Amino acid sequence: QVQLVESGGGLVQAGGSLRLACAASGSLFGINLMGWYRQAPGKQRELVATITTRGDTKYGDSVKGRFTISRDNAKNTVYLQMNSLKPEDTAVYYCKCHQDWVPDAYWGQGSQVTVSS
Image (tube, rainbow, N blue to C red; front, side, top):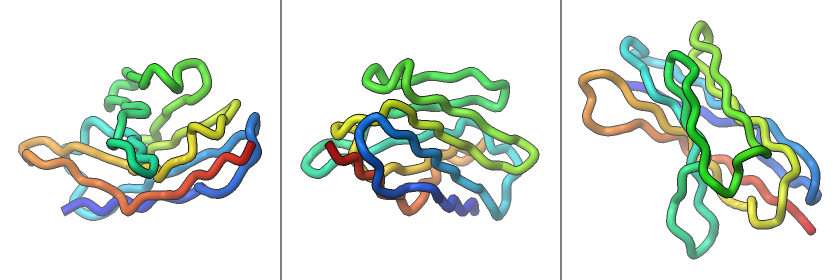
């Protein structure tokens, strides 16, 4: 079992920045892909960014050039640096990770990010 705990959400004005962190704990052998997804009220959960153990990254179109995902494999932690935030970035942000030989992904509890105009 893997537990994911997010931190760093909050309220920020448009144009501001926030940094989210997600720490994984528990049985961590074989953790591979880690990432962030978000869900706004009334909308489907969508990809924000993912990162492999090698550092290969993928971003959702709406955040490219503004958000940066990174990870510290030694600390089993993934980060999301969010710059130039917009009101449409307001959502609950969820951390997700995959583990070798485990078919289902693990999810964090979610962290609220609110961007005021």
